[in-house]
Length: 367
Ligand SMILES: *Cc1c(COP(=O)(O)O)cnc(C)c1O
Image (cartoon, rainbow, N blue to C red; front, side):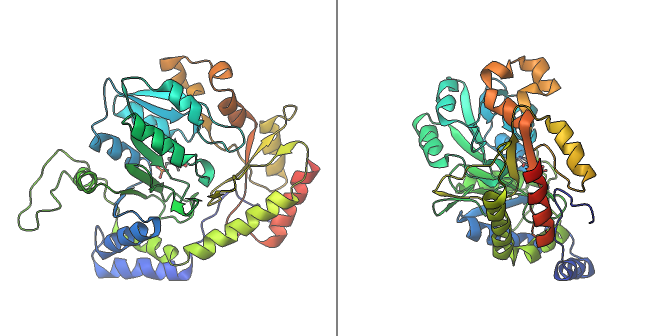
């Protein structure tokens, strides 16, 4: 059997044709495909404005800049996530305030958010970890009560819902990534959705040298912006994949359902999906029992041809954050530390064949 990677993008001939069309059109950046994709994402997430940018880190970074969050401000972030969720807070000069996760959903703990709010808190970045919505409705209420900006890091959550509401549609901004490990990909790419017209306008300016996107007559620059534009080549690649997003999501769901049903091993704790949530299954993540060494499991599985890996970082344990904040994760973030040390991400993607799924399940059950 060929090696089964952890993730593998499904780029089809029609996607390549869509890219070729742009290449031949001569209109390579910020053409019609960027606009069309912004409209499609807005409709899909049911949020009026969408701004495409270069990646799912620039989305968060520009959002913090647009909200004028910086020195002297505090931003609450889950201790267990991809490092980018916290890096952006540092990049704008604010203080990252970590909160532990729930061990069964890997999502930020609502009650611990409450205990970390201070007069300096300006925002909460909620991560819908691995594509399962956090307790977003309750966190949204809490943010309203305390006048905090709710930013949703929905990088993994295209196609994730709490009840009928899509991830990213609750906060002042929702951020998506199109990295190859996400549901649809342009290599690099990101999208921000927002209900706030002014924020959208500011994000458009920040992405494109500070340009005033409302002024059609004369070019004017209203702030010192970046160049975070997505190319039309990337937008065409994404749009083409977007046309089959429902079948991508439903294939991933059926693979996840097989894992949930057929992985049966006391050494493996499966993820919990609360009944009011529909995950996108960006990652299928399990926790190994205490006596198993996760790194040994990873190398044994790779030898068997299965590309498992750790899922996300316990961010306060990473060198930069350890040196700066020197927090004791064992005491403050025990669940994040456990998810980091004992967590295992298992291959789950559309192109996975049934015989490969059988082999993955069988190997996990023999662990
Ligand atoms: C992938 C990811 C990001 C970063 O997205 P990029 O497009 O790679 O910059 C941020 N946060 C989370 C939770 C992610 O999974």
